[in-house]
Length: 72
Image 1 (tube, rainbow, N blue to C red):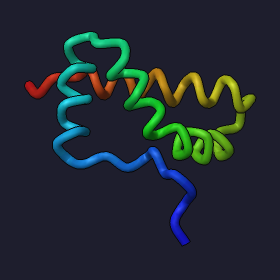
Image 2: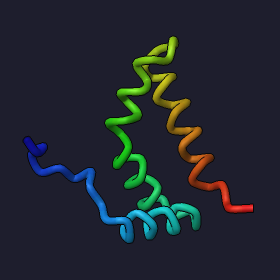
Image 3: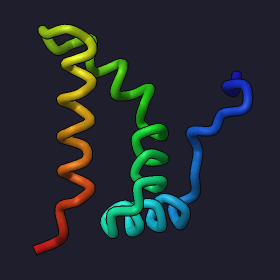
Image 4: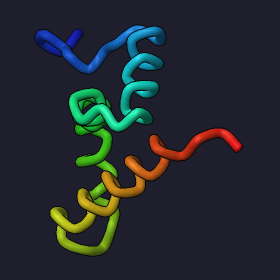
């Protein structure tokens, strides 16, 4: 059964636009990307042996570093 009003689905084109804008330091796009992966971030944080808050912070930090990384 589908999730009620699932806001976590975007098209490939929308995702690429968000990613491009986030790489250009657009705060709103960056927050939208984090929100898209919020469920996954919370789920993965349960497997890290620190407090949930620290684990979520670490995952988000790594995610932001990955977003900002340009192709070399």
